[in-house]
Image (tube, rainbow, N blue to C red):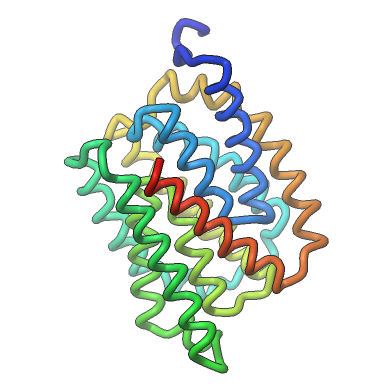
Length: 251
């Protein structure tokens, strides 16, 4: 088993362990924080390989998010987003079949920064932010981008965070809807990821080592979510998305 694990320096293992904790916390409290994990994984491992490794940890995080918020989902919102997301995932599969590692992170970073700008514009330009954010055009745009970015770089979380903020979702409805949404999407991505060679035996063993960090992070996030105010929650999501996007662009 040790021979199958990636040969990495101690600092790289420390960063991956920290990322695992962030994955857990992002699933139960701070969705935008997951972009930081994406950036760290992509900087420590080859970009495509990092996508498969991180996907498996995200699925573990999804299980904890469902345990914590399974009763708070807005299923109407999920079903309305589904067609656009399916289109986005399909485009992502085609893209990953031909794309090289270089440049992918920067594309995702640009998309995330644009989404932050669009989200802030939606919230400021309409008194009824929820209706503006939940319009058919917004659903089509955010949904297709979420499907594409989640397939390409596991970064659909920040995209959907921007949609939920734009649509003024309360904290628990935000987290519950996101929990079911990504649990379904991430499981659906597994066959595609195996077919594209993104999930491998070394990735599985790497994730076994990192899973305890996800568990710790999930409980930390659950503690935070029970104490954070709506306004602070939304500011944290926006700030973490911007920081993660900048890291992807500049890293």
